[in-house]
Image (tube, rainbow, N blue to C red):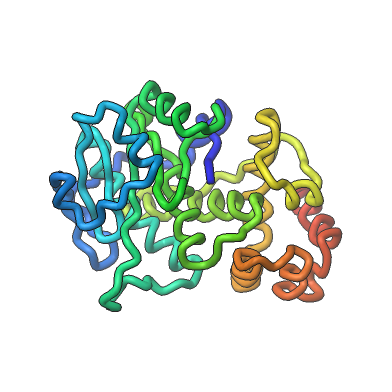
Length: 302
């Protein structure tokens, strides 16, 4: 799954949090896991499972890639000052999203491993464009999750990096621990919602003022169409699609309805149709898509 990076979304990502000061990433712990960041030879990585698109990425400036790993991730990168903060953020997002989903970390204390997630970091637009074209991605793609690996631009000229990393980690964790059959709107809407909240929580945990920005869609897409899209809409509607999907997921989980939303998400990730999942999760509150749309549009107009 992909996160869009058209000009409007780039502006949002660059100002996605209200921050005071500058975050420090040096040896910061995540939960009870002290993190250190050390480059290691590829041959010494504990998880060397490279996907087809991972090989495409590593073919770009092949002699310059460095490698490191954290408890749940393997990072491939060019410069340490770009990758070290990502190592901290990735572990934070991992725990934040699993907690949001109500999933216990299956790799903690079990003696088993499901493998680490590989993250490939691109520091320049030229490198990202080369990979995007090699992987046959849409021109507006800003980051992507493919076959369990994450491909994320991290341009040093952007002071605030936005929620793209958390967005892609959300896709990976939902597919791994909840189900693989989410419809497009729910997959992208939840990833946007949870990563925006997680991005703000990351900075609040470091003493900064940060709240997710509420982004009103530039136009309205009827829910019958939004919830039935099998693929991304035309580029002119991508911004509306992402924002409205995020707004709908946030609406479904607000006012104490988070358990009901997770129930709907889980049912649909395992293949349940929207009508049945909606009725099972929310009962008489929103027994149909029409009832949900009426309440959602009323909230958006407030």
